[in-house]
Figure (cartoon, each protein chain N blue to C red):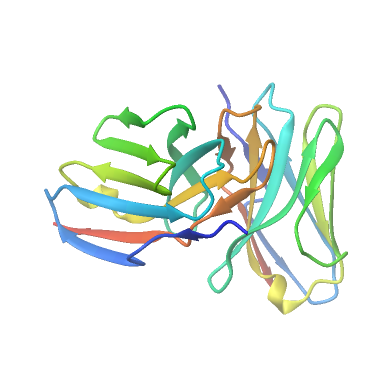
Length: 112
Length: 111
């Protein structure tokens, strides 16, 4: 059974710091991996999607990498801002056209 | 390009009642999946529909059901509501292997 770990569960940093959020998984047979952001009481906003054949994806201040051999993905946030405060979740389908398996998320607080 | 639309945004129901939630996927997306999110259990998969057929189902009791229409819109129904069904219900649409787009969710409160 695929297990997904996101550690730590919560993180508080001062504004301006560069951050690395980690996502570890046990089964390297994934099709793609997606990072989401969730604000309290809201739906999930897709940040980045990395296909299994890719190593990384970038969007603005965000960069996500995928290393299937080590079972790890990282989300890098450059120059963090208070508006980045949210919960960040990694997720991936465990088979073709399969349900998404989610990590429990990392709740990020960026202090002004 | 319109996103995934879920209606209603909020619902308050009484124990024992039933409820129907609606999800309109992104145009062209044929797969719609549903998730339940609670503080204690996190995100749990309910079911997935593709071209009007249920393709995957999670470990929820039979009180939870769904369907998909020919225009890909989907509904989920929960009968005989229990207090523990209070949750944020999220719908996502996808197109093959190109990631998932989620709606804003329906917040269901059972009293």
